[in-house]
Image (cartoon, rainbow, N blue to C red):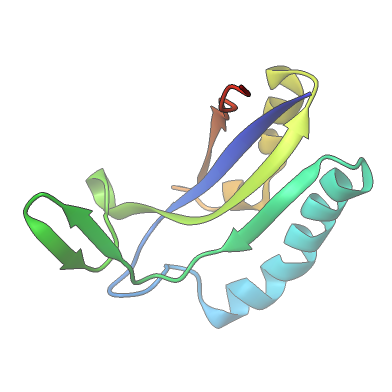
Length: 117
């Protein structure tokens, strides 16, 4: 089985994720069910939301705040899972609660294992 990293992206507001406390309360059961489905199949490796603020380290130094891409899209969380095929992960992603938001998306990235010596 191959491992995949799913990055949950959404547009941000002013110094906060766009979701309101009400959205978060309404979304939690959907997230629990969605992640629970993957976990019950024994294919969940890890998942967490991430804080809004962070640091970006580059040759120019360290900058504060999220590293926003165009249109203020940023990563709000991640999930690492195992699957037999990319298509299996695509099917899970199509039902991700992040997609309820107009600018919400799930980026799927296959994980390349380090070679064993």
